[in-house]
Image: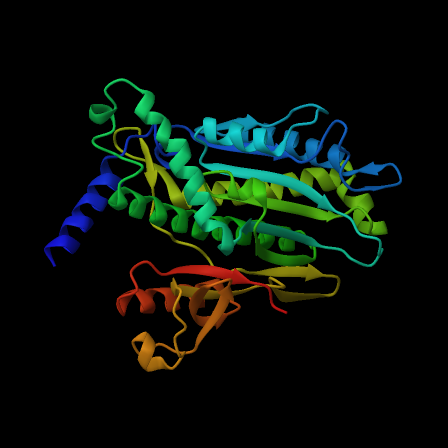
Length: 362
């Protein structure tokens, strides 16, 4: 019991005392890294004269201009011209900036001309440990600084209690990324776009950035109508505005100025991820497509029977197996708000490190 109390005390002290120079969420101002995919010798997906690299750069520049006119927001670009930037360098730019958000913008393209729609990706579950390793490596540089013990109040990237704090932050990053991704897709739907939903995949550039982040697919250049829309000035303005609105909603939810002019994480207060969409003659409620939510309870090498008695009475329980690791999940919801209630219930049962993850609805 004393050990548990000591760990909680150390963790709480770490999370409260770690300075703004270490984790971007407490920096001032609110920093957003905008990453226009591809560029230079890499055109991305193409169809006729429509090139992904041109569309995403134009949308990013329009979005950046909107953000730069908003007080308290600083924009960092991975590229502002038609140049090729390596993936590793894109991640380095975001990490060095100690950004609060990483937004990577792309377009889709397939052989079929029928596929269409927007989709937004977040960090994959199977790569959270990789992301944690990156965080450890990024933070390890503090040992090279003079008087690091005094400056960082004993923070040690190799200390188990500190790593527990980092792990909690990584889980928080994932939850915040899902919130942002859902808001982006909701805003796209409100402009009468078809949403393919929020998806969770191990995309390298998201896993290599140590902050909440999303990768947005604006639409399919291979779809005749959608290709023309996403390459038009009107379409680019509309998409940039949708992303801008989502970023401001995220900022107001998670990042607010304190009395000392230092920004801190604010409590989560989100809205249901449905939107009323005008569709010719009738309005309808549009649910985000292709996604459902579960609460991850625990993971380990032991296979456990999914009966409720093994999970403190919670049901339904499901699991996935990745190599020798079993991951156990509570609930299965298509509505994010309903899953947040599941999360609160799981934590009340003792699963204090539980968090929400996404799955494709297939």
